Length: 308
View 1: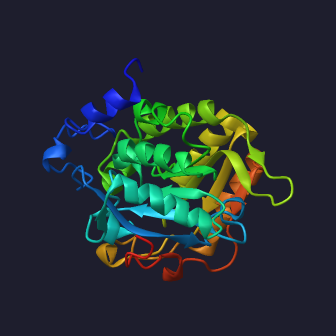
View 2: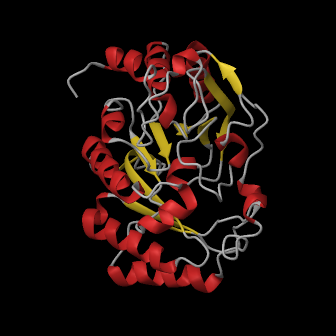
């Protein structure tokens, strides 16, 4: 991209096209697009989080910052209250920079930006401030995967670890559950840019904590083993061991999907085993699986403004 970050940041919020929705609303003047957020920075929670992949959370926890709003709006979202901007506190960019430093002081292994896409201009500004004041932790970009390559390019030099979802290979499923039939195409392009930026996987030899690289998550949905297999096949055949694949079975049925014949139930043990077995048959060795009964609301933090 020929435009520098400063000029891009000023322009993008006036006719927002940060994500594939391309709403083109003037968020600086208070207009709201699909993400439900204006140009005002809104955060729902900032605290140590213990339930990410082991190389992200470690023993101390990941310094997670949950941003309000979301450009995906999946019907089954377990963070529904913040995704649809029901909770959160407006803060300044300067306060966000201070939050990063406070998490570092608490012993966080990294700064974990959760659902950050629609705030990329403010986040990069806050990171510049925080680094000038001593921020030295790896930065994790924790995203739905529904990203534009141009936006990811603006994060070069800021992000050390990309933690995207890859939700769908089936366009119809993406349309049905996330109103985004173009999700597979955008997710593929964005992931290619992420891998290109951060390169090979790097870990701290003593602690095992991740320092650099890409972990791609796939949440297995009830009744959709075929989609899960297609996602894993694409990831492994395209990237091999250049990325880690995290196969998740923690889907939690929420109130808003209680009438859906599939989404109203948990993933069965057999469904998850079929996906994991398929990954092993392909040769996947670099990644994570979840064991035991983990589909529990205990994985959903309280969005009560802690740390904000």
